[in-house]
Image (cartoon, rainbow, N blue to C red; front, side):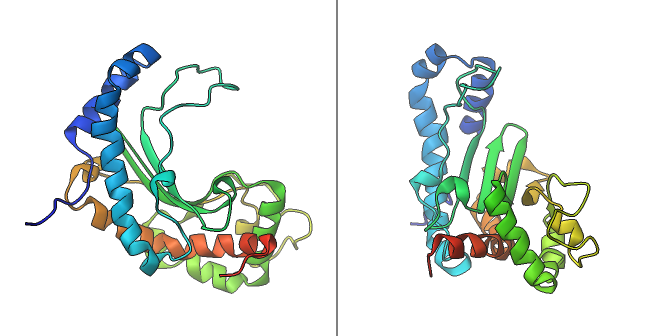
Length: 231
């Protein structure tokens, strides 16, 4: 008997839509069983399926239950005090780096939105400097990677940018536009978020991750080296 391909369902959508309109602890606690059944369980099944293929496409990245983000929002420094996220998300980070210090493959799903991408969202100054130095040392390799047709089809590389090339790098550097970036992101929203409900979802997600994985590997290389780890 064939096993159904893991994916989200209409019940996942229904729960997330209802949570958006009832974002309170009392409502969530009353419907926590629905969250476990229709959100957390399918996400963990998707992650488990990806884990089978990561040794082939991204051997240094980890797909495990810890890859799934918690539903609880950190409201300590936010004016928005709603306690729960209204999307489900997972990030697949380097096996030797702390989760918040690694470039990653990432996706999230919400009603009307499916975002699949990769990169490093908010690198601190030391990590950003190492990545820029890594790009500057071999700009041809980086440009071939991020300007390839396959990556361009995934939205290319983007992120917040400085107006000028950062100090320590020549203004006319071959990779000047990339050295200006303050974050390194690739990928974006899928044109049809209903893909997440399709039996084709895991296969499509894996193909997109396979395109994005070399970009993540490039970003992580100087961070892993600085941490003193070897493969």
